[in-house]
Length: 209
Image (cartoon, rainbow, N blue to C red; front, side, top):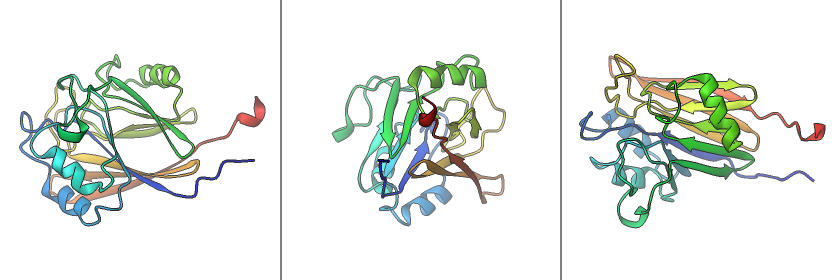
């Protein structure tokens, strides 16, 4: 019989905050919104280059379960968030949520950076349904050949050599069995919150095998 996944999971995907080196703090608009319901977020995926400037306590506040998956960015030291999370960071992580296999790496390893063909090679290597990457500081969410690719952008809109005007952004993924609703959040130049929604449904090809 088919596996049943009763519970939907809400996942906060973020990274590249570069606090305090390239950005002073997490935007207040994001903080206010995310701290309203701290018990809503089940899991956090952190693409790297985010440690410092109160980032750890903020993540603990918005996710009461303290369930954080993180990979090493090109500016991170070998050790992850301090305290109870202190551990050696891997470059790549593969985890499963519901029926979704989620692969994550910071993204500086993907050459050319953000390139769709290069992303696909990593996706095939990890065998995942969702591939999360960062590094470009530019939010990008798309579906290609039955795989969901998620780049949350930079939480703080930190400057980057890859994009002239980075926009503060993050992504929420609502995973329900084989369906994902992806909410893309950005702060525009007027400090207003812009939200877009993208739907992804994993095709089941198992009957063809």
